[in-house]
Length: 377
Image (cartoon, rainbow, N blue to C red; front, side, top):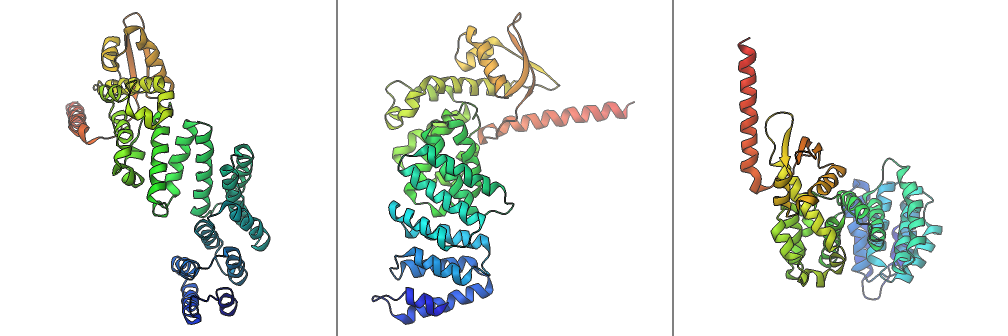
């Protein structure tokens, strides 16, 4: 392996001894199965020695090491090196085509290269053809029990691009939750993290069934957007939705709002956003009206006041809340009340801890009274 790699890495700007030293370290990493260090060593050869022909490098590495390199490690290396070494899209397509012929014929490598091809098709705006190929790759991936995170990362990245382009925000939000489980956020540049944050926050607002936002607001990928003054309004808006602060939301959603100028998709869905905060406020009203026992009631007037809607709109709002599973109950049209049987668990907010404490105290008292009753029998 040393001789071949030294030949392809020969460079006028770097002494041969430096390359030999790196190759020696690579052999040690392989023997010790230190795959992360092995990956970093290969990247050093590419970047520190101004090596440009990533295809020849990969051909050589895989031909020499494929017999004992774990398939997962092969995919990880392939993903990192294609991503970081081939920036030009047309060059990447040529590399993918060449690698299909050169690399070991495994399902996972084939799936990964298909996904790379999909990315290039999406860049050229051929979304339908790209999505067809993406489904092929996904079928291969789903047939394997052990799949490298690099493949999931690439697969979900492409699905996010497609769902965003189709303005399918419900599927985008669902896909993004899975994506968060696989991504290594450190591999994204600050600009990429901000772009990802902007899209995911908008999608969470525009997806009709997303009513809980903690999975987004607690994630580290928001670090860069939280420091960016340009994006403060968007982040603040999502926090207000999360807490059900209807007055704050309505203020931010004024017709001449700055946020609409930055994010025209929100302007397009302004009516739906106002309806969504009304439902979230209704949910909070119901949640905090819970009493001891199996069921309880909430009046139409309570709901109308909290959600800032006319009494005639309450029934429609309650039915929408039923349909997305926020609570289970029945509407009593004769008495203008809603009989609530159960409520979906609420996310914990620091401001709501006193109320949570009160509920635990009430539960403790109920248990103690029950035990006293049993003991007296």
